[in-house]
Every structure is written in C-alpha cells, then in structure tokens.
Image 1 (cartoon, rainbow, N blue to C red):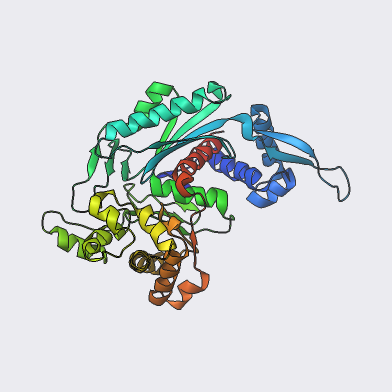
Image 2: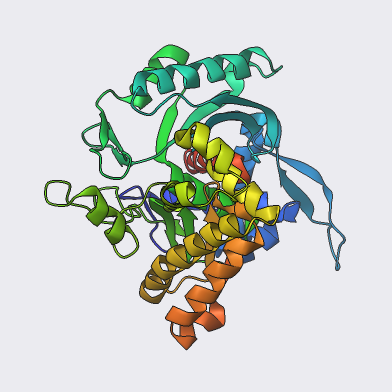
Length: 406
C-alpha cells in the first residue's frame, strides 16, 4: 500500500490499513473478506485479523452469508453505523448549522441558528457551544458514544500557532482569532475536537458521501473567497494549511475602487462573488428593478438570496447580475482547472441556490477559457448538501479520523 499523507504527516502502517479496510466496508458493504482483500491489496490473513478486531470493538458486524460459488459460504461484513456518533458544526454565510450523525454520517438531528457578525468571533463560538449542548440534550445518544466534534470555519486554520484568520470584507483587514477553538470545545465537552477550513470540509464531504472512489481530483468553489482542493483522493492543505485561499490584495496600496476592479481578475472577492456590490452600485439608477423599493429603504438589507429569487422570478436586472457573477467566477475556475486539471468542480457555499442561470454562465465561460484536454474530463456540478455542506463535511473528516485510529 502506498504512503498516505494526512494533515502533513505520513500515516503509520496500521493507520493506512485501518483507513483502507474501513472505508471499503463503509462504501461497499455488506462485503466479504475476500472482496475486501482484493479491493485494498492486502492478504486475507491480514484482513481477517483487522476485521476480527473491528468486530470486538463493535465497529463492524457479521450480517449473514453470501452466495457460495462452491465450498463454504463466505460471511458478509458491514459497518455498524451506530457504534459511535459525531457532532459537526458549520459556520455558513448566513447561519450556523449543527448536526449529530452516526459513523456513516447519516443525520440524527439538525440545529440551525442565525450567525452573529464575524467581527464578534467569541459570540460565534458561544453560539456553536449552545448548539452542541442542544444536540446532546435533545437526542437519545449516550454522551460516551459521541466520539468526536468537528468544526468547519472560514479562513486559515494555523494548527502550529493555534490561531484562525477569518477573511474580512473586501477592503478590510482580516479578523484574527487567537484562542484555540479546539481547546475551548475539548475543555467544555471532554470530547475530541477537530477544526477544519469550511471549503476543505465541504469538498471532503462531497467526495466522502457523493462521488465514487475513482474520482481523484476535485475543486469545491466555496463562494467567492476560497476553494477546497482534493488531489489524488486526499485533501490538499498546502505547506502551511492555507491552500485554497482565492485572490490577492494589498490594502496599504489600493483604494476600494481598485480592489473591486482587481477582484474580477486575481483579486480577493467578498463571499457573494461581488454580486451584492454590483447590485448596490446600479440600484439607484434602476427604479423599475423589482428590488428597488427594498434597496431604497435600506441598501444594506439586500441579500444574495433576494437577488437569486428575483432572477428566478424573471427580473432582467437581477438575471444580469447573476449571469455576470457566473462569468466572473467562471474565469477564475478556468484558471484553476487549467492549472490543476480536476475531474469535478463543485459550486457551493450558497451560490448553488442561484440555479441554472449561474451554472450555465459558469460552464459557458469555463469552456471558453480552458484547453480542450481539460474540457474532455471536466464536470461542473452544484453542491449536493446546500447549507449542511460544511457541517456534514467536517463530520466526514472526524469519521475518517475515527477509522484511522481504530
């Protein structure tokens, strides 16, 4: 078996085997030991030893006998999804979503709360803790069977310095969270806790839950400020954990107008790919716009979903805003897919709610700006899990951790 790098460390032989065997059982089960052996490339004696250990842990169970092709009928092995549970938390564009799942990442209960302003980072974290309390209290899951908490957050997760850099709005400084979120949750709940980037969580969830194992290279365009990257089947974090941060900016030398202009090239966007900024600029001169009254009362009350819904209702200006947003995002995606040559690009982070108008604009632009060899294998698809993407994705990361350490 090849070496696997997980969060900048090469896994031990046991960890690699645990992952290979348990992921095969999860994806293919019920499955025989012989089929597991062929799938992961380990001899039947090794497979039997590992599977017997998992049975003792009650992580898998024997389901019954397969059809025999001669000789003894082989026993079928299946993952026991209720041998442990996971809590996943996702900080989204407009809300915080918490889920409690079993080891197969099937949702037992879901909780949503409005998101406080990112500028008040402590309040965001306290709301997340309240969600964990509610998930534990309102389910029948025994606390000692909750094997991990996963937290998906925007920005750069610096595991060495134990800080988080949350992206500020265009033209503003980033927000630094200097407390260890991992330590806060471990201390309060006495449950192992993992903190992961939101886009990275989302792309891993799509891969773990949604796509076949033969998909090796993926991008998840998580709104306008970041993307999750999977290369050769593994999350790509980069050398310091900040791979996937989209756009460059130098606040000391550029005005807001220059920053907004640069955003359509290599600059950093706001999370809404600049659609709201464009809407605010044109609102005053378009009294026939279906959202003009709301914009006149309070321009800052406009939301991305307002524009998406207006576009779906046939408003031409809203449709133009969404389409232009898709064209601009498509250019950035074209650059990335020419560089990385993935099989799949997922559009998520709330942008998928715009529907076919945005998706068609993205696809047309990407096709225009990418080389033929890239286009022959590339698929661009909307995210499957909508606002649950980060919470489910980070639950998948925790589930993989549990498999690895079994």
